[in-house]
Image 1 (cartoon, rainbow, N blue to C red):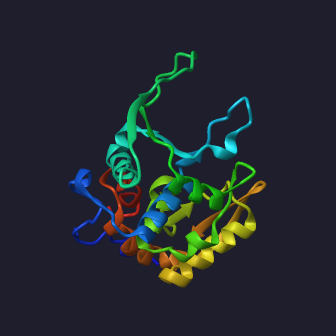
Image 2: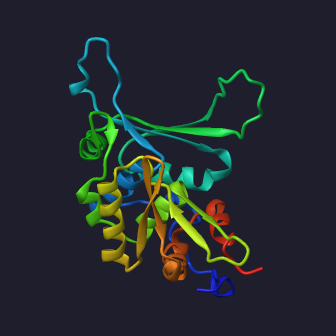
Length: 234
């Protein structure tokens, strides 16, 4: 596939853009999908570390840190969570003392809730994230867009094929294989498992880059569109 053939296409109605503060999700399966992918990639589900070790009776809460420039995505996640429980969005304090000026970050909290605990029990083993087989059954274009927005990258080297990678380095080879298979089975997009030292990640096959773009574009938040614009023709 030549670089000049990579096109972003025309603007389309985007189901996640616009007035996200009024979005209501009534489908439980949809909520399970969204929160599972939002928690597995970039966000997280946590329980308080009580000194009396009574954590088993404490429900989980969602916490996510993200740059303020991605506020549209943060607000969308907040809206999804508020279909389950209350949330709080605050500026994240920079505790570093090295004098380096970092990009402003936001922190999104949810209240604790049994619904979040059930999802946490699926995607964590011994406090380590794993890939939940049930979550992969819910793989669709929106789920893939979540992975790409939060943990994806793209680049276009001069005279070379465009490159789209999913930074699944925190997962095992078997988990990467499961994600790759789900993406292909559900969306027809092929990917290879690449190795970086002791880690593994997914790279979309060059011949499927256009299909990948066409698939995720309707679900991309505006602040993350730069990842696709890197692949657009000059």
